Amino acid sequence: MNSPVWMPYTQMKGASVPLVVRSARGAVLELEDGRQLIDCISSWWVTLHGHTQPQIAAAIAEQARRLEQVIAAGFTHRPAEDLARRLKGHLPFVPHLFYSDSGSTAVEVALKMAYQYWRNQGASGRRRFLSLEGAYHGDTLGAMSLSARSLFTAPFAELLLPVDFVPFPQTWIGDQGVEEREVAAIGHLEGLLRRSGEQYAAMIVEPLVQGAAGMRMCRPNFLRQVADLLSRHGVLLIADEVFTGFGRTGALFACQLAGIQPDMLCLAKGLSGGFLPLAATLCSEAVYQAFCSDDPTHTFYHGHSYTANPLGCAAALASLELLEREPPPFAALEGWHHRELGRLAGHPQLCRLRVCGTIAALEVRGAAGYLHELGPRLKQRFLERGLLLRPLGGVIYLVPPYCLERAQLEAAYRCIAEVVAELCS
Ligand code: PMP
Image 1 (cartoon, protein in one colour):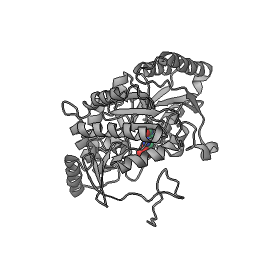
Image 2 (tube, helix red, strand yellow; image 1 turned 120 degrees about the horizontal axis):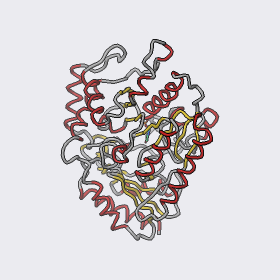
Image 3 (cartoon, rainbow, N blue to C red; image 1 turned 90 degrees about the horizontal axis):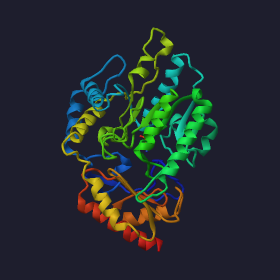
Image 4 (tube, rainbow, N blue to C red; image 1 turned 90 degrees about the vertical axis):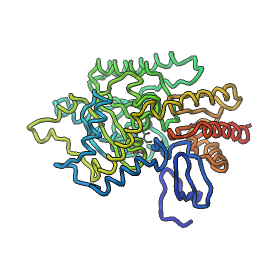
């Protein structure tokens, strides 16, 4: 196909022809040529309840007939107000909400807010940020600055903001060394804060699971220690829940599970149930108050054309409605993952098996790194077997939509074991 579309994260030279998707329902994608694929990664980790979920589709259609878009400065509408109130009910420590349109913009807004928060109070020396090794927070320049220095950021190294990175004490099932890694990471952070705590505006974390790093997981206790240390040094904490929000980690928000109350919290991806680009940056009363002033230079001069888009907000409300049901639609997946991973324990080619809520990951031994040649070969074999999986190098992960049936999940794990045996023995 001679397509004019330049694909994201794709070397276009020699790129394989993209698969044309005709329609989708639940966890299943239907291709133009009639083949079906089980979507085990919720598209780009966005599809919470399944593709074309009827209540969300209906809410968008209804909203489109009433009000599709309106300028968000000086105007508001019911879906934007209702959604902000509903989210505040779940996250009362960050009661003010600023809308944008992607995970990257949600992070960019948090970064700018944190920086200006200090400036507005005359503390303009707080210019540096803290982040975790392996972090990924988006592709705009600010969000990229907060992300680990990597293949993705290398061409832009000279344009990035000053950020110091703290080790991420990742863990997995049966791991014996995590405490030691946590002590080292906390010691590192303590050292930075003791030496130059007054230089930092904020620290950003992906709570409990680092997505793009390869579904690396940490323990709640580590995050509580980080939050305590930052609060003692007066440094703001930003939780990037772009990926972990809305049930992914087994609670509605990872911060609830971790027992932390950040000063800012970023949402996107699953916010609209995976239907429309919508994002939000939530902040504490103290952060918000630092911008309320008679001085015009204290204003947060930031906004996007599609800020608080009514269709996105209507989709998000319908999605939240589904998430608030009892039992929550994401409740069963953790147990199913554990059972399936239990069957793979002791597999000679697999290691570092791990689960957090609906997210599961495992690694092929000796295949570390995003560019490891095994990744594309695994992906191709999975596609041929009817599975959409997108390994990050040798890390195979599952982030399914919550409607995935148990039999579909079991089939996916069986296929993973067979493909690994075929390609890696
Ligand atoms: N933060 C995290 C934790 C993410 O996983 C991502 C996307 N993978 C982003 C931010 C950026 O989101 P977007 O792709 O919507 O800009």
